[in-house]
Image 1 (cartoon, rainbow, N blue to C red):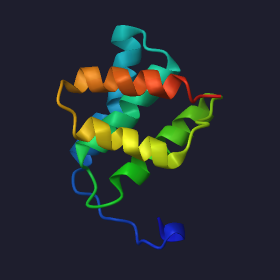
Image 2 (cartoon, one colour):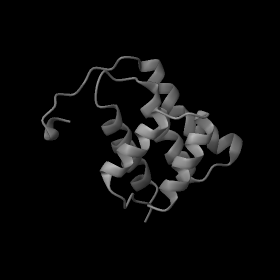
Image 3 (cartoon, rainbow, N blue to C red):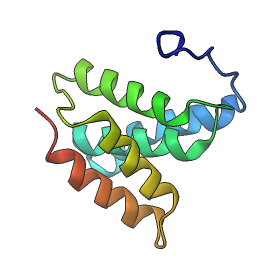
Length: 112
């Protein structure tokens, strides 16, 4: 965050962040979710948890990027497009599940 000119924002809710971080693990265990599904669930979870006072989309992008790289993959799309997709999830008119599936599908096309 400091590289982009912003001081790190304080954590609003450690419990909300922990819950978002645990979702991919749960999906892997109960749904046998692959790495891309887990990455989508993680990014959506962090973006929707509102665990930080500021920098939520940047945090979701950074965590998604690190998660993919640790699993031998990389996001090859535009960062701005990713932020727009996360905003779409936040302003959805249907269920979070449906929005997560759309995000996952979009993400699959941008993984290299």
